[in-house]
Length: 174
Image 1 (cartoon, one colour):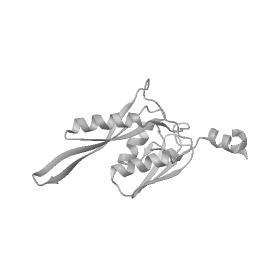
Image 2: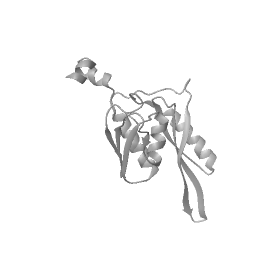
Image 3: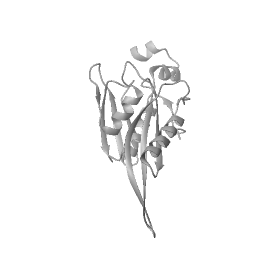
Image 4: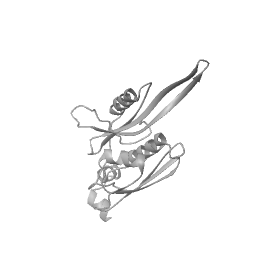
């Protein structure tokens, strides 16, 4: 799932205190010759509010079962996101399908300026100060995946300095 990204650290859920956030539940209908068959799909974001986050999708005939499946799916896809002083290391754009998300670091006291699905992901990661703009599709599935796209492209100063073969001081001063 994350093969297109560099420096992605997958995390095992054991020993982490994960909190789950329900992003959305949709009622889906399958029309058959015998009538309509109703089901539910749920998208959930889980995180430890300290840089580890995952998203999952669950489908079932029951809402609670769909949510439980989504939480289990999300726990299988946990990744570590670089956070610096409660915000992002740099601004980043992400896209998935028709959804586009722009994330920008903010100073202390700004809070999370984000709507619906983006807010759920950023809260689960543990980012406290950020500015964001969501454009294009407002479909929660695509917005969550676009937000993950932006977060997975983030690189910490340590990684950038290491890739360039210079010290962190030289990276910022030079």
